[in-house]
Image 1 (cartoon, rainbow, N blue to C red):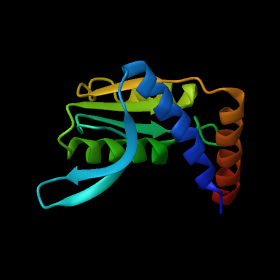
Image 2 (spheres, rainbow, N blue to C red):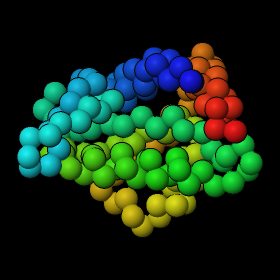
Image 3 (tube, rainbow, N blue to C red):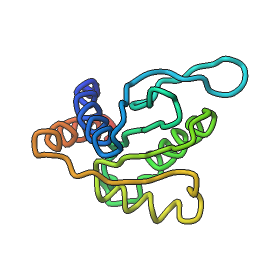
Length: 141
């Protein structure tokens, strides 16, 4: 099984970069979703809960060169849960330029309530994502 816990280090880096950019505190914490008191954790939540950030570490096309439909659906699922919060600003931060471009094209006209951004990772963090992605890809083949 791919060691996805290594991706937490990447998410912490990304959240810290977004917090600096927005000049706010962001922390991984759970917030209420829906109206029945259920909660869900997000990578970055502002102190007042008005901003929620989700880090997307998906790679681009599949190993067979196809559109990564499962990854796209997973990202839409993240958006669904973000929409169930009281957050006023919802941000998806992509760490892979290819997947960012694929998702931007796929969601054209659908994501007006979301800010989508790409952040280029330093080599150390890119390597972590690449290693986890390769391991996961081997498991799927």
